[in-house]
Amino acid sequence: MHRNFWQRNISRYTFGMHFNALALAATTLLLLNLVPGGSDANEPESWKKDVLEWRAKHAEELRKPDGWLALSGLEWLEAGETTFGGGANNKIRLPGAKADHLGVLELKDLEVKLKEPAGGFPKDFLVGGAPAKAQTLRTEVDNDKNAVHMTIGTLNLYVIRRADRFALRIKDSKSEALRGFHELKWYEPDASYRVEAKWTPYNPPKVVTLVTLAGTDDPQPMPGVAEFQLSGVSYRLEPVMEANRPDRLFFILRDTTSTSTTYGACRFLYTSLPSHGVTQEGELTLDFNHLENPPCAYTPYSTCPLPPPGNRMPIALPVGEQRYHE
Image 1 (spheres, rainbow, N blue to C red):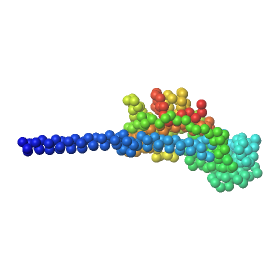
Image 2 (image 1 turned 180 degrees about the vertical axis):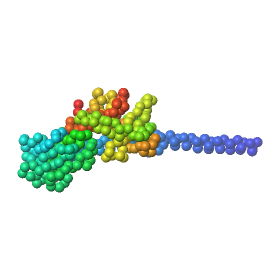
Image 3 (image 1 turned 90 degrees about the vertical axis):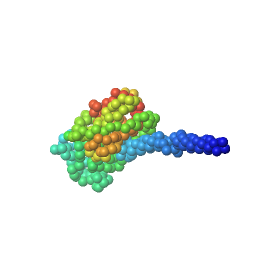
Image 4 (image 1 turned 60 degrees about the vertical axis):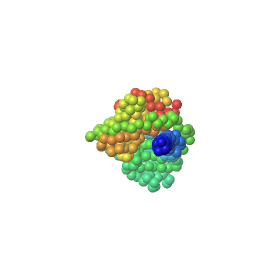
């Protein structure tokens, strides 16, 4: 009896130890999920912080002296010579220019040449950072990254090309839009609009012709399609790739909020490349909290592409940036 008594109590003691150990483990897992500092507790807050930091950077980019808010003019060039400067007798009058005559732009055979005006170039008129001289201005179709900038005072001028049309783009670091800047409007961050998409490449890639708000056509390569679900419903979006940014995908889309709270034409979403690149099947993160307004939402002088037909979504995406102008 004495031995059986101890056997029974040892068994109870052992069971109690195992039970307490399991209970402790379960409690620890629960605390890790509930208490700040646990394995996943900080993830939503970290994601939200990243979104807010991205928003601040987006506003900062807009407010740069040569950002989109500085855009104060877009003058389409006609064949032949176009004079430009501060004087009223120029074809393109620049009220902010320090000199009556800055130069002459000659459009001929899909080239734009800068020519010296009568009386010579103003001394403080710079082209490519050097004192102005007659030259052919470099232009690339739908790519302004390598454009030659002409500067004087607060003005920053350069020629852009859209298909076979050319225009003088005018930026002013003291523009009315910059001086009157007000805070951007955003929806509250919502993690349910951060989704994983299946990436399917197009082999060979498609070429889609995007219509722009300026009335021009913009051919762009479309490398594949992203398929994803929102609230259990499947959707597809097709990005394009910009020649000057091969490291990212560019989604141009519209949803039903465009009739009320977001910019009417479209919004932009930039993402990293799919997990195995654009030429192979893979996965892709779409965070619609990063939807941003196109430049034309801030200024009437930009040329913005409109969404391809497949990217006009029949649902509301109440996340990302809202309208800047009412």
